[in-house]
Length: 116
Figure 1: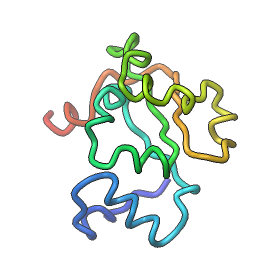
Figure 2 (figure 1 turned 90 degrees about the vertical axis):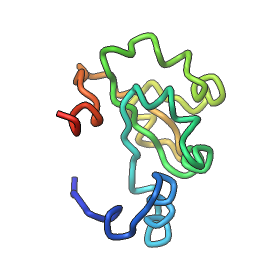
Figure 3 (figure 1 turned 180 degrees about the horizontal axis):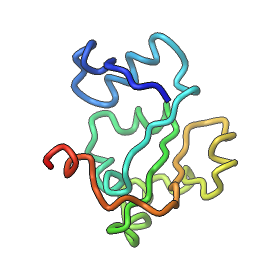
């Protein structure tokens, strides 16, 4: 894993814009977008969310407070075929898809972390 100030240097406004800038330099096939399970319920509100879904695989990190959340999200209802339950299939899938990484989650969001 490498930490970068790419977003800051390129003054991007949204995730789709960051990914498009990365894609102009290299293939997104090398990358995974990592989001918390809480964001899965909001994902349909993200700017250009459909473009994101079509262009990068998304690993969703389990969050304890959102256990019954997955099947009720608009994204899961609209794209149930894109959810891979098996991690190996997710990693080796030829087109972008979703995987819920079901590990013991951290009960702290990035927003809560920033505000502490």
